[in-house]
Image (cartoon, rainbow, N blue to C red; front, side, top):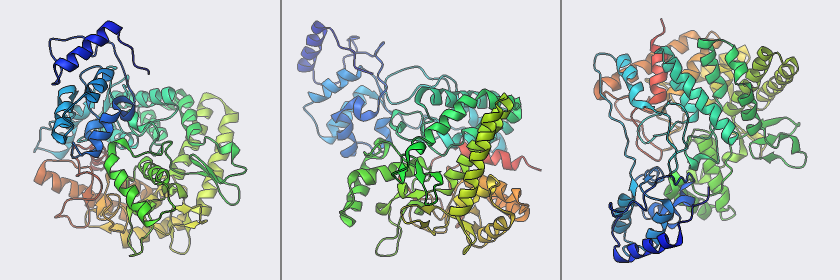
Length: 541
């Protein structure tokens, strides 16, 4: 959206105000207040040099703070004022930002409820709920219906988080909230052609693991199978987003999110359409890219930035899954190569999306489409079994299509074929053995066996992966191990809540006396998907 131009005499008046008064906006002047002016753009386009100066000068400890601010005045005017700012010290820039923007903070005040962890979570839904958005300037993409945010620094809706949050909302009878969230995601698909990572403009280059079909199944459990038919157009649009370019891979191995494998099968990878630092992690990405190029001068900045962004699309930002070992034998973020990898979790989700489209088409009476997508799902299932299974180690792994080999790195992404019932019975038995031997820890299952300093590695455990592991094992009657993971995870959640009255984003499942760690920010409190999985698991008999 282009800036609206001020009448010329108003522009002269504003310039005279700049010259006569270099401090913050004059409350007496309503001229430069935002009224009908709306600019919803990525932060670099919105704020120009101000964005780069704030992020590179470390005005705020968290790179996400500035990209979430709300402008108090016309954005074009703010840019003009900043261009004329004389005090460009760190202190001067910070004061300018505070005068012209509303800083986000965490926006949460949780009231503890020591009577019951379940009662506490029930009350948290109101704290985490946001009303439908007014259309204002900034980076927030307005949504038409109320929704649940994760908590802490995550002040907007997040795609794959929301499925696991819905599990708890379902248990607590918040069905209309689930309906509203589904409608918001359908709105995003229809508006942008896909579901972004979150409803921020700086997420418009990428999505997240495609759980929309699973959300519809939760809603269908409450409102009937016709739900699937109702959202069939959105399911197909999401599918087309992920499969874009699949019909034109004759002379190339990959395009965007599709990859053509050696025998002609087409599977998916994570991607991002942009090749710049992530605005919400600007400093971190610049630093990582400098380190990567110092170690490998053949790399370009664009390659590194895209791999970092693709890692963020996976939701596993970051993990040994996307890394190589450096010369010291350790996993190093500067070796990230996400776009070389065909991930087992993503392709299991795509199998589910194809299966759900088939089911929805059948309900809608379109037998031809149902048959088409049944075949697509079957073809993908066979490809997953062919390319992702390691008979040697008895586990599902990611596949490096550049090298035409498995990555040989273990992670809980390997349970997805169990969750979606792609695996054969004997494969599930081998996976259960591996989980019990190398992943089961005092607090549940660890994300990977590798302690790399990244948050999607040891010693951390995450609620969504506990749920996927438990349900996947149950699908193959591995009930004892599923029950052990469940009891250890629930006890850890409850014990930490008893000490802190907090529900955390992630947990240290190896040493229960320590907090989780790693990643680009501290562990957050809230927390949507932890609440959802706890409510669901703890309600079981």
